[in-house]
Every structure is written in structure tokens, then in C-alpha cells.
Amino acid sequence: MFMEHVSIIGAGTMGNGIAHVFALNGFKVALIDVNQTQLDKALATIAKNLDRQVAKGIITEEKKMGTLQNIITHTGIEKGVQEAALVVEAATENIAIKLQLFQQLDTFVPANAILASNTSSISITKIASVTKRPGKVIGMHFMNPVPVMKLVEIINGYDTHPDVSNTIIALSTQLGKTPCVVNDYPGFIANRILMPMINEAIYSLYEGVADVEAIDTIMKLGMAHPMGPLQLADFIGLDVCLSILEVLHKGLGNPKYAPCPLLINMVTAGKLGVKSGEGFYVYTATAGNKDLVVSNHFRY
Image: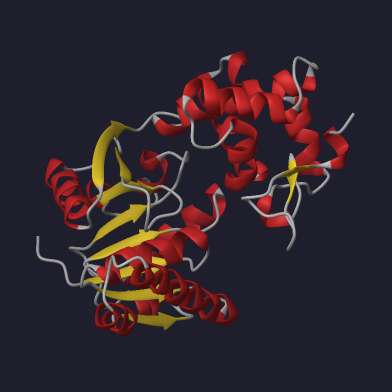
């Protein structure tokens, strides 16, 4: 299937990263968000990230300018998806929002287009069920930061057609990514394995087994993880971690997936990690990701 035009729904961290990668690889990208300010912020972020790639010698200045020219923005879905051969939804990880979006997309997107979701845990089969094209609905789960991370977790829904799956596999490879195909069960593979580890790290802190620094240092130095599980949870967003664990717990019915009470309390208190300025660590102008400072709440 020939693709030239791709539409991305959502201009947040994942959406702008996905737009960056497609545009860098020569696709005409329509980046869609209801908030014009968010779209402007996304374009600035993409330009900044392209500047980093230029500085590292990964791309040329000419390539950067061409990439930016490949992106147009829209605040409305109908106009933004008119020419799309593929739509990648990267909106908030909320099932009601996603179902509503896919109903709209099914109405406005060309009949032969593929509809993909960047969801990290929500059922592709459920999403596909609100469309008239379930065979053309698939999961395309990019990792953050999208321009850097090589993995794309491809999730086949119950009705996803093999040709659609093969197209997305080939497309992911074209983007310089490594596609891994999984079936549509709660948490897929990435989060079914990752989130229980993060949850267990939070339980270890909650039960006083070790402090924040010890937990993360042990996993970094002992298991060769580039980032400790508590720092990673902050980076993902504690609200997102909680949402995924709830999907796992409900979908699989196993108490081992029940979110730690500490995680629930932190989300209730608005301590969501990097996005809110505080989680297990604090994130300010003087205490960023490279200079970690443990939150006062966890200093004893």
C-alpha cells in the first residue's frame, strides 16, 4: 500500500514525536489538535529536537528544513484527515476519548485508510468495534522519546487483517524502527512486563524495604537498566502508570496487578512525576532529569 499522507491526532509528547519521525522520513504529515497553542508548542519542540540531530551530525540543516516543511497543522479532524492513507491517534490515554475519536475518524477518513492507535494499554479490538472497518484498525505503540527509541510495538486486534499488519510492519521498518508484533490482550507485552516491575518498586518503597535512591541504583547498576523504575515512572507519568495497572488488573483479574496504594495516593495528590514537577523526584530548573533530587516526601 503506497502512503504519502499521514495524519497524527494529538500534539503532545508522543504526537509531536511521531510527527517528527514521519516527516523526517519524507511523509506529508497533518498534525491535528484542538488546541492551537499545543500545536505551536509541538512545532517548536520538533524544531528543537531537529536542531539536536543537526548538532550531532545525524541530519543536515537542509534535511531539518525539509522535515519542518512536511508538517502542516490543523485544529479540526475533518479537514486534517482528508488525504490520509494512515491515521495515528496519539491522544490522551482515556478509553472514552479514544472511542469517540475513532468514531469520528471512521466518518471522515478515506475508506481505504488504516486507523492506528498509539495506545499503551487500551484494547485495539474495543477501539475497532466502534468503526465500520475493524480489519483496518491496529495498534502502533511508539516508545518515548519517539525520535530516539527504536521499538514499535504493533498490536493486532481480533479482526485486524494480515495485510494491514504487514503494511504497518513494513512502514515501521521504513521509519528506521524495529517492529515487534503482539496480540491484543491487556497491557500487550511492553506494559504487561514493565508495569508490574514499576508497581513492585513502588511497593518496595511503600513497605520500607529500601529508599528511592537505593531502588533505582540497584536496578541501574545491578540490572543494567538505563533508568531506575521510580525515575522511569516519573518520566512516563504516574497517572499513566496507574491507568495501565488498572487496565491490567481489570482485564486479567489477577491481584498481582493491583496498583500500590502509594501510587494511588500520589496520583490523587497531583504528584505525577516530570509533568507536574514532582513525583519520586523533583523536577525544576535546577533539578532536572540529569541531576536527580529525591522528593522531600521520601527523605527520612
